[in-house]
Amino acid sequence: MKKKIILIIIGIILLAGLVIAAIYLVRKDKVKYYEPEKIDAEVFNEEESEYDSDLMIGLWQDSTVYYRYNDDFTGVTWDVADDVYESEGVAFTWEISGSLIIHFYKMEIGGVVPKIHTISVLDLQHLSYHDEYGVEYDFVKIE
Image 1 (cartoon, rainbow, N blue to C red):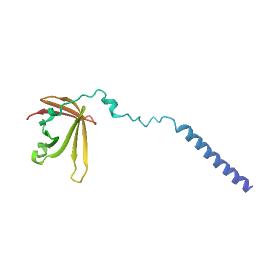
Image 2 (image 1 turned 60 degrees about the vertical axis):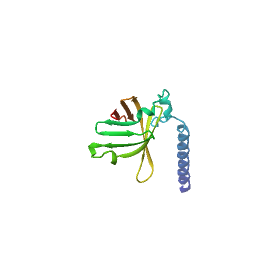
Image 3 (image 1 turned 45 degrees about the vertical axis):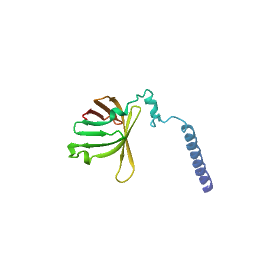
Image 4 (image 1 turned 90 degrees about the vertical axis):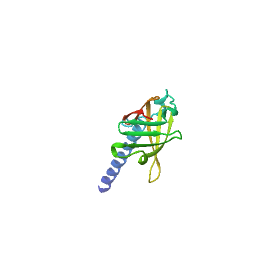
């Protein structure tokens, strides 16, 4: 009798294992709705605008925030509201690629952190861009 119960329990365990394996095999190829499809960023930039990097060169102001872009693709940013001025500002390098402006900030502890913005306006007097979080920046050229 004990052997019969043990065999029944082993049979139930094996059957449960087979059912779980079958469920896994059926579901593994189905689309999981909680995992968004990964789309290459270039899909969104098919109609990229080329902005002239020469227009960036100079001093730009947005309220208390200043950005200076130099012709050697270096720059500095500071915020006078934090009692920081140009000589104490945060240095960066920059580049324009299509409609993107990318700031590369060198960290004191090592490494470089890129900050990517999408340009919406760039002309002789105005610069507007936004980041991936939707934060808008509107600058006026003052120098």
